[in-house]
Length: 115
Length: 114
Image (cartoon, each protein chain N blue to C red):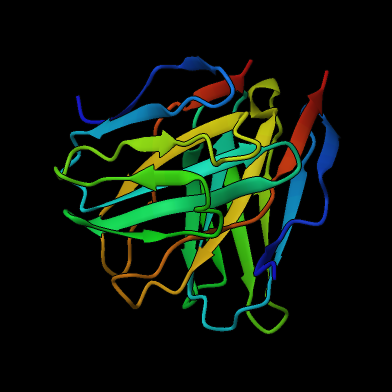
């Protein structure tokens, strides 16, 4: 059963710690994305990757880092430099190229809370 | 600069009636539009899409209308059901380039009243 899996579902971080959110897909999608959702802010793009070993900053990349060593995996690290990391994080994937019918497939999200 | 705008943060509709969610966009290069539905603590799921060569697309209870001259699209849900209570995101992309991303609006929370 193809899909996109995010883990963990809930994550707690102490101030000053780095944490890594996992995102794995078995849809054979080329492109993967990380979004952050805050109340009233909609979905804001953090980083995206169109191909293995390549990624680009989105609109709010400061304080985050990513890697794309495998097609299936796109982990997101929230560093201590991120001033307000408490949010709901969503990973998505899609076929690259024009006419992406159906757009993105999203994971079920990770709720990160700084304690 | 918000390229996709959903000006109503929330909407309440009686069960059985029509729900109409609106969306405006500013980039005339957008040629593919999507609606996603999202429940709390879950990821958005794709609902329906429309290409700019059409002005209407229908899928069961869901219909999307596109008015290119007004840069406006709307999602109609008929009849509205309790399970339709969710946040709805309007989204748009140019689609012609490999690197083009989908741009999302801020969402409209739909409440279906019993």
